[in-house]
Length: 416
Image (cartoon, rainbow, N blue to C red; front, top):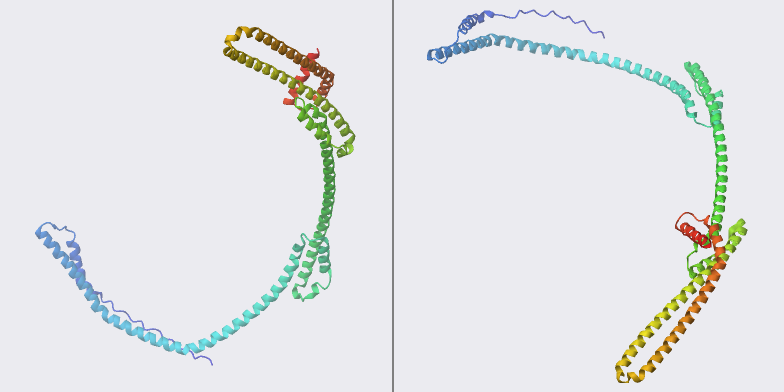
C-alpha cells in the first residue's frame, strides 16, 4: 500500500523578545564606574581607602543587579523553551511509530537483494578463483622440477602433452589461457630436461673422475707403504752394519749382550733383502767378536794390574806388621837384643829377598800378559781402524761421531 503524502507545515517564525532596554540603567552606571576608575585611589589614606571600598561596593551592586535583571527576564523564556521541546518530542515519537513498520519492510527487501547479489558475486569469484588456481598450478609446475632427474622431467612433459591433461575440467572462457599455460610450462620443462641431462652427465663424469682419483690415491698409498717398508728394512740393515761402532768403549758384558741380540736376528725377516741382511749380520758378528776379545784382553790386563796393586799393598801391610812385631819383640826381649840381632837381620834379609823375588816374578807375569795383550791389540788394530773408518760415514753427527773421529785420529797418529 502506498504511503499517503504528509503535508509538512512551515514552522512559525517567532521573533524572540530582545528587550535590551532593561540594561539601560546599568549601562549608565557602567559609564560612571569606567570614568571613576581612571583616577587612582590613595589606599594608604583613610579617605582614599574608604572611597576605594565604596567604588568596589558599587561595582558589586551593579553586577548583582545586572544578573538579577537577566534572571527575571530569562525565566519566562526558559519555560517557553521547555514547552516547545516537550511538544517536539511528542510529535517526533508519533511519526517514528507510524514510519518504523514501513521502513522495516524497505530495509528487509534491500537486505534480501544485497545478500542475493553477494552470493552471486561469491559464486562467480569462487568460479574464477578455481580457474586461476588451476592456471597458477600449471604455471608453477616447472618449479617443482628445477632439480629433478631427467626421467621425472620427461614423465612430467609426457603428462602435460597428453590430451587428457586439459580435458580433466571444463575451462569455460579460460580454455585458451589454459592451453597457453601448458605450452609455456612445456617450454620450461623441456629446458629443465636439457639441464637435467647435462647435470646427470656432469655428475657421471665427476663420479668417474673421483673413482679414478681414488684409484690413483690407492696406488700412491700402496707405493708409499712399500717405500716405507723397504726403508724400514734398510734402516734395520744399516743399524746392524754400524752396531760394532756403537759398542766402541763398552765392556765385555755389554758387547756380549749385543752379540746375543744380533745372533737372534734372522735373515728371513728381511724379505727380499735377506742376502744383504745376512751379510751385514755376519760381518757385524765378526767385528763384535773381535771387539769382544779385545775387551776381554783389556779387562784381563786391568785385573792383572789390580792384582799387582793388591800384592804391593799386602807386602806393605806385611812390612808394617813385621815392623810392629819387631818393635814389640824389641820391647819384650830388650835384654836379649844383642844375641838376637844377627838372627833378626838374617830373617829380615831373607824376607826382603823373598819379597824382591815375588815382585820380580809378578813383574815378569805382568810384562808377559801386557806383551800378549799388545800383540793381540796390534793384530786387531788395523781391522778395527778400517771398520771405524767405514762405519764413520753411517754415524750421524753427535757425541759418538766425535769419539770415533778422535779414536781414528789417535790411531792414525800412533801409526805415523
